[in-house]
Picture: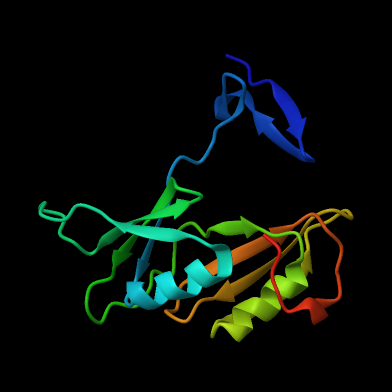
Length: 157
């Protein structure tokens, strides 16, 4: 069985990673935080996400929330075990923003910190940064837009 190669956005994808209609889509992601309430406050303010309690009364317990974007479930949030640090290995979530510098300002304003500022991925249309929210969860920001004036102070997502 051969693997047909085709480009998408400058990246090459094999047919093993393609579903009918295009590349495989991420269908769910989860975040584990020692302070999910602070996580919710920070990310609700930054992205407008809402959080709906889930699995109350089940063996999974009540410390799990569905993360929603415009009313659509996009991921899950669970409380980390007491004293457990956030995972240091695994996948990192990247959120697309149109104004990376303004998003970095907003992250700092809301109590997060920048791990890595704007970093070029190559070419003239791919940059990222990584940040840590107040609960210690690291995530990335990605943009196809060149650097802008961060004076606006408000992230455009």
